[in-house]
Length: 279
Image (cartoon, rainbow, N blue to C red; front, top):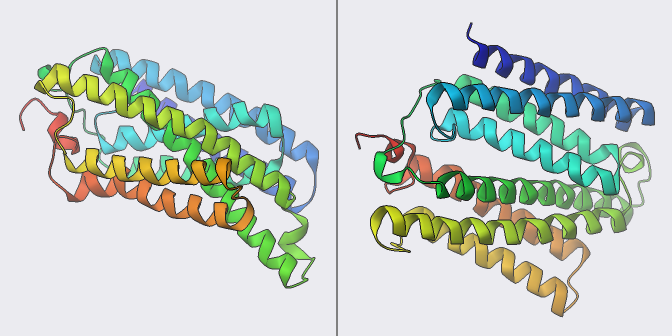
């Protein structure tokens, strides 16, 4: 087993361990377990970063050119952003969403053949890692807003049905979940915007045009408008609560299709095969 694979496997196990502690913290109402989960998750992101560093030196470029690498990078961005946000909100419920999702992404990545895809020479530019980092961090922020939205709907439904037992006792207040949702949207939207802008400059460098209406570009723009509409509604007409949670969930479904569906189902410059030297 190579160093990269070893670090990958250790990271996956660490995310699994963190998931266990966060779930115990939420279900058993044990704050100490949540703090342990946070420390384990922090160790995991350090291990994950080391793994990316080794892979970068091995493949000689930014290791986000295959689906295997992209899912692992998404997990890294998700955990990193959650740990930064946890400094402000510090509640285990979101950790109980984030750590299992990161673990699931790593497992999905492990099930996909680990093929090293050499970047097409025409695409080699410093703008590639910039574009990728902005885009994936934006996706991670929207994934967290999705998680907060789902929790909000569950909590809201239980309040309306007057069932104050079970999972109701485990979730944060509606106000806290709405604040988390808004914070994640406020972080994700500028990151997505910077990802689209840096991608446009990268496209101009590679193909001589800023925008070619490639399927992924088109769907990214649709998703951008959805999130822009959600933020506009929150800021101007006071959309909060259930409506904001619902739209954040719908927008994330579009984001998932843009991230995975377009790359796997539609032809264009952004399929994983299109990154290769021979197309």
